[in-house]
Length: 494
Image (cartoon, rainbow, N blue to C red; front, side, top):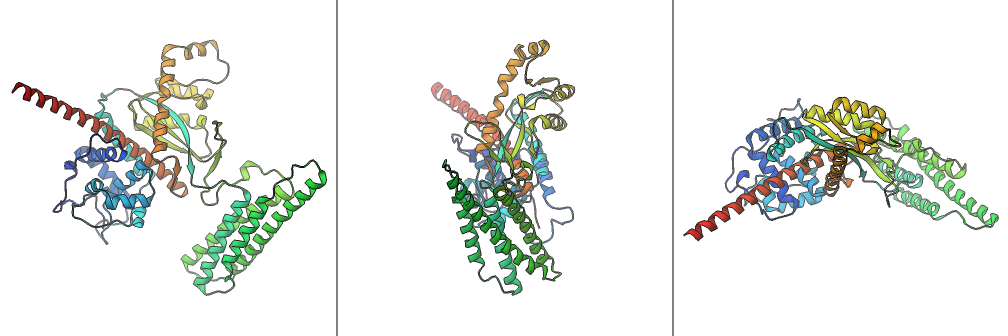
């Protein structure tokens, strides 16, 4: 049984609209909570958000049956808080159990001592999908536009740029990726044998240590820089022998594991799932063994498209953007569209895509969500001749610098006052990117491609709610300052 929010206020509970915040605070938590309070207190916005939140429950599940689950509003609050503050679930659990104002927002009475479990929060926040969060984001932006005084029919001027969100992986080499696969294979086969009461893996932990020892020995041997050819040849021989010992021991382990799982006959679905998981890591291990042999023994250069940069986060890409001091980043590109009010209108996780490939789709998707989106600025990375033409067909005004030598007509356009002014404003999108990276999008803590996309979507929603909260905070501060001035005048007049 799951509901949006408990309809009946309990004894000692403070209504969400009556929660007071420190208006002088510059921390992100009060701003986020004020934004959530604004969404809740606006009846029209609350109905829209709650209607979308109901989509979390699968259509084939009756939300009125079963044991009580977390209220959808509480899940949403904790999910946005996690990304806004760039916390892991341990920190979210601690704050949810002890932060007074947050517990009021979660509708707990002052004397309520009930606590949240870490796994409960993790499982419930994971119910969100990128599609649901995108719908909520559109509602929040429309509400934010009303707060900033956007007029009906007023054009939205956007700025588009991309950045890299790193996945939570270590620096990949073919040797340590093989160790990752072997470690998982040994641990999983030990668990499986214990479950089925099979013998032969009593020394599993010892085997992991031995694999690690062979890895370290191969890693420590570096190529000789001596001018003596004999010494260089001897060192090369030692390197090859160390790597061969490493992959041969790995092959012996894999052969033993294959013999065991091939002889298991069982129709249990869970057991078959565990066997399939072992087979998956065997495929990873065999690929890394093949690449180590080709690179070290045969002296072959491994093509980039054959390389895998994580066996756990397989969507990870090796990205080199040419930044000073950052030779490469391991993750995925994320593209965002920001409007002139600072709200993030749309975003896209880029898989094996470059900026010039997603410029037109990003603009089209943003235009579908916000029809008044009629102007956008880009940097040179988004340029291509076809993009220039396609974007002009969609937008009224396109600020997209061209690469290379400019024709006379193009030079006149890019040297015009309006083009230069829009180019100067384009740098504001960097502040939105910096804010996202500071509030969660520096490194993705969730696993899998779906988790990656959900993590990005949650961060965008949390950022826009924080923007709403900041607007409400400033308005309330101005209102209180006006009240103080009026009271002071009354006292002076008296």
